Amino acid sequence: MTRSHDRLIMETPARPPTDAQPDPTRLQEQPRKPLDLAAPHAESSTAPGEKTRGGIGCGWLGLIILMGLVGLGGAGFLLVREIERRGLVERLETSFGHVSLLPQPRVAASEPGLKVQVYYIVGNQGLAARPRRLTRPAQGMERIHLIAREIQRPPQSGLLRSPFPPGTGIRAVYLYDGVVWVDLDGGFLEVEDASAQSERLTIYALVNSFMLNDPTLQGVRLMVEGRPVETAWGWLDLGSPLGPDLSLVMQ
Image 1 (cartoon, rainbow, N blue to C red):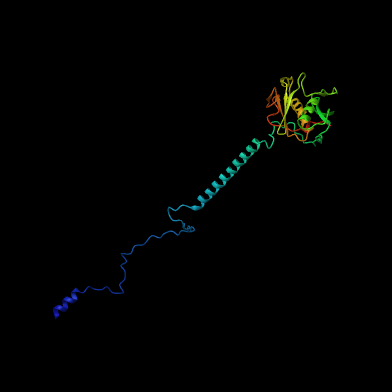
Image 2: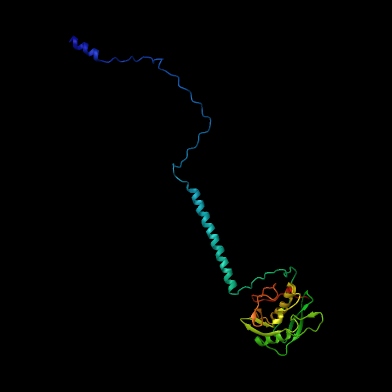
């Protein structure tokens, strides 16, 4: 009994006392961390590797709008070309120097009858209308022939000038889809001291004389020796039917 009790006492480990104090030699002073006075950074809610979707959405929207605008512009261009090809509108002339901001004189087209207005050139300034009387009442192609005959008559006043150079005139006239085709002599283009103003006055003396004496006409085209001309002396565009120019008419 005594030996067993002694062995039990020797094998039982000693428990440290509950009020044991820490060894001062094992304690080390921990370095103090400086206080971070900066505002804490907001944590990003986007997970690593995840792309932001807002920028991509705006980019696609801008691309779609741009493609829509380009499509509308192309459609408008094709529509204008189709309208011009079908002749629904007259082509704009390349020169706008004749355009006047002053009130235009009111020159009404004559009613189909015996009385017509023939236009002559006044100096190099404008056009003047002189009354003529047809030999008989006529309409359609017959009336156009009578007007062409009166246009070629020389003016009765020395202040007026015929639009035809000396020795030239009208070879023939044709009517097609409301447009009068006037075939002129080859010498019509052979003039001296041609200018933009003289070309305009000469051409519109003919155009006004036809258009303002027959309200059924749609325009006038010019030919020389049976061939359509794009211009007479290089300034006025004659590639499409011309209407009357009332800004050149003097009171």
